[in-house]
Length: 400
Ligand code: HEM
Ligand code: HEM
Image 1: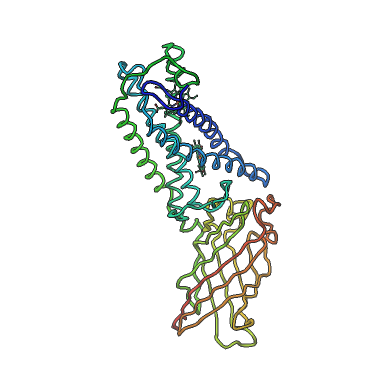
Image 2: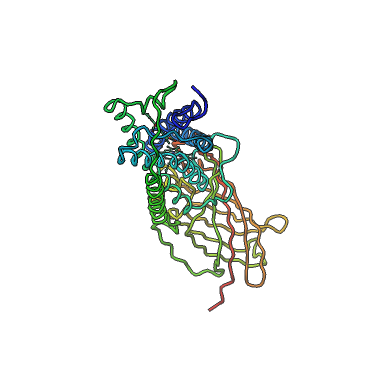
């Protein structure tokens, strides 16, 4: 069996590429579905789900490169003619499906990869080249759009594959012709001379274009960035008014960092430049727990196993603001979160220019102090340490 194609028969390389891709794709589809369906209600279940996803993603990236190599090879080769191009409808359908499959073996893994690169957290690709892609921002909207592409294109792939396999079986069992045999190994005497109808190629590209538009619309409509959950906070009068800022958290999940922010919080800040009895003032911060966005694990993070937004919708940090070494400050107080109240000391730096103050601080917490994630007692799944970062700009509220 020659390695290269002839104008009438597939060569060995094309056959190896075809069956290797077939094996990988037919493994990846059930893996993706199983990974989606697996529960994640305990640490072990989450670890297993993540492992299945990692296998799915790693094999998926492999398919992408195999597909590129396959297509490059096919471009250098003559395309064996169809065996029965006189049956116009069948020739059209076969060519349409081949185009859908060629487009799918590139775009299905690529969309999965882009979705992964735009999302923080969850299962890593097992390779040493990092989890991000250049030019792909970590963004919820981008992640939703590529996630929708992956979902819709996967369905196009599954649909065309069913037609493709049924077609192969029909040729073999009903027509009893050489279509399947000539893609199998060994020489075949069947000489395909019929031409591939161009209309099949055009229809394949058109189906793909429609699928991409539908997926983008679906992704955009489902992917609005979270502004906050249902919890509303009312701002109390404060001597300093927060103008802008962020309260962020970062955790280790499956040994890579996932970071996010609370979309809704308010603060009452009293602060005087010259300390009175060792204190510069006080801060009372209220945070809507369900306004958190944390990569792909937002709903788990605010759910009953972790921060319990439903039972404890508002977290509060009440602290005295006291001087610390080297011109820095300390917020010494208590953080109430998920039903637990724990003493916390957060160092911060402060610059005041005129009536505008800018504070930047960071503190490392341990989730176990708040009984958060008790079902996940293993650091490898969800790390114990949580880094909280604040960056706040406030202005002196004019006295009324
Ligand atoms: C059990 C599964 C499969 C069977 C029985 C099968 C069978 C076949 C056969 C018989 C042909 C040759 C058609 C002809 O001579 O006109 C073929 C071609 C092709 N198959 Fe499959 N296939 C399978 C899975 C797949 C998968 C998973 C993919 C990719 C997603 C795929 C992509 C293609 C493509 C793109 C061609 C056209 C090759 C070309 O002419 O350039 N097949 N397949
Ligand atoms: C040819 C390769 C691939 C195939 C056939 C495939 C197929 C699938 C399937 C069938 C699902 C389940 C969809 C559902 O139930 O809605 C899925 C989900 C998923 N796949 Fe793939 N996949 C491939 C490559 C990849 C790659 C390369 C990545 C990432 C690097 C990836 C990441 C994902 C993710 C994250 C999900 C879950 C989607 C979500 O939760 O929105 N896949 N895939």
